Each structure stands twice: as C-alpha cells, then as structure tokens.
Length: 209
Image (tube, rainbow, N blue to C red; front, side):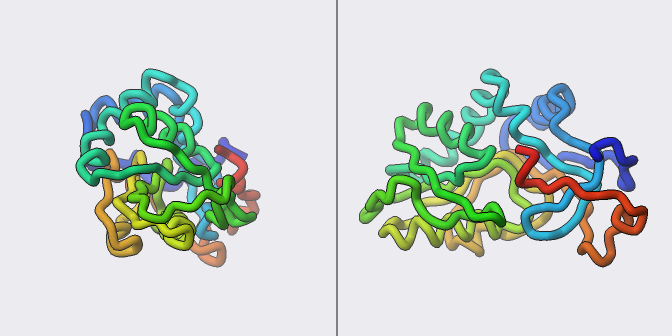
C-alpha cells in the first residue's frame, strides 16, 4: 500500500553533480519519491522509495541526468558499460549513446542482484563503467563488478542517479564513482520496522521499477 503516512520529514537533497534544484524538481514533478511501506533489495524496510522508472520514462529528464554524469564517466576512459536488467538500464543506454559506448546487460536473480551477463560476452581487456539507478548499500554495484571481472573486465568506475544512504561505493568496487547526489532516507530492519508493527504489508522494491 503506497498511501501509508510517512514517518520521516521531507528529505533534503545533498548535491554532487548537476543543478540540485533541477534534480529536486525532477523527483517532485514526476512523483518519483513514493510514500508507503517498502522492502528494499537489501531486506531493510523504509517508508520512502525512489522510483527511478518514472524519470526514465521522461526523455528530457533522462537526457539531462546522463549529460550531468557523462563528463565524470568520460574521464575514466571506459570502453563499455555494464548495467543490471532493472530500472537503471535506461540510464545506461542513454550514457552509452552520449559516450558512444556499447552497453552489456546483466541478468539478475530473485534478490535483484546481478548473476551473469545476458550475452555471455568476453570482456577481456575492456574498461567497463557500472551503471545503476539508485544506490542504498552499494551491494548491487559490488555484485555487478564481480560479474564484469569474472568476464575479464577491469572496473573503470560506477555511475548512478542518487544514493539513499551514506555508503562508500568506491571502496566496495575499488574504482571511482559519480552520482548526482544523496537523498538520505530512513530504513529499518524488518524486526524494528514501525510500519510492520502497524500491520502494514510491504511492497517489494524489485516489483516497483
């Protein structure tokens, strides 16, 4: 149920790249920040969810996000992009168009984490950029990095839209990173979730994008 009352105050956007007012406006105007009860990919629960697919459906918004990320990504001199087959794929394709890079998609398991490459391609001697939509723990990008490295690639860096928690993704993947900013949103374990305590059922994040 997406209408459950939020338990936290309106989050503040901490900018890294691009125009923070425009980023906040994108999120607000597209209704990308949902209130409700959500089970995130890492198993934590939250009363807020960033639904990137609503932004990805807007060509202008997607193009703007890609243009803001492109200079940082280009500086890493990548030769390819690897992305999971989830909502972040739209951003990966647009970055690929801007930087004239091929995009390779990873299959994902029931937990939403990358398990392999769809085309089984050999990435030996390739410098790949990992692309996703929203980062919470960085574990999704770490899994994606493992998949790419097993195919012979080196990781040039990782890029995504925004982070919803403070996490050192660069340390997890041993490569530089770029994102538009941080939108810090509260989350709890299932045992400590106040929404579970109210008896509200949770929407799985994997099914919302």
